[in-house]
Amino acid sequence: MSLFRDTGIVLRTYRLGEADRIVVMLTEAHGKVRAVAKGVRRTSSKFGARLEPLSHVALLLWRGRGELDIVNQVEVVDQFWTIREDLERLSRAFSMLEVVDQLAQDQHPDPRLYRMLLRALGVLAERSSNPILVAPAFFLKVLALEGAAPILDVCAACGRPEAEGGLVAFDLHEGGALCRSCRRGRSMSAPALALMRRILGGELGRVLREPAPPCAEEVGQLATEAIESHLDRRLRSVRTGAAL
Image (cartoon, rainbow, N blue to C red; front, side, top):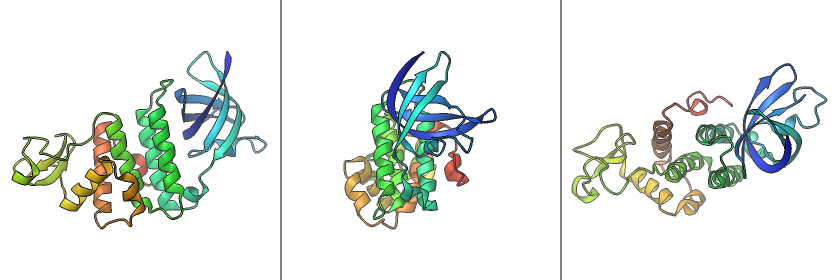
């Protein structure tokens, strides 16, 4: 066994035995890590509250011989209290954690995904920010990182330019936006199409600083369905509002 240090974001936890927990984290240098936090469920545990989902922590871990490492030390970097105290923000944060948990691979470093999640949580934690578009924008950016960004400039099915057939529907199974002739999936308004183009086209910072437009909820639904299609599963945290 050997010691290693890293920083990570706790994605979820689950019980192990009577007093321990298994903590699943996305770390900066080691990808997704599963580690045992011994005695963490006891009231006397010195770092029980530090290893809750959403916590950004600095870690010292023992590299185990099996699939599970062992938490040796934990220091809190940020617990995102602004998010935890707001049910709407918390639900959106958990949806991002769930997506990352599904995409990240055990022991496979993905610093870009780690930085994206950390930045998204930071924006969501800003009291002045509007939480409506943070998670949908994160979903779209993750799709782009995965090489599965939706096609938004031409019909994904027939290649017809927007000026010829109009882009009026959205279906990630087809690759993105669809013209009237190829339409299937969910209907899509012109403002929603324009907003998604801005998010994926380098204007995300400006979009998140602006008041949420009327099409924000529509974009949220489109982005959620797109990431669910990519993952081939429903997001529990979105569909039920449940915490991880």
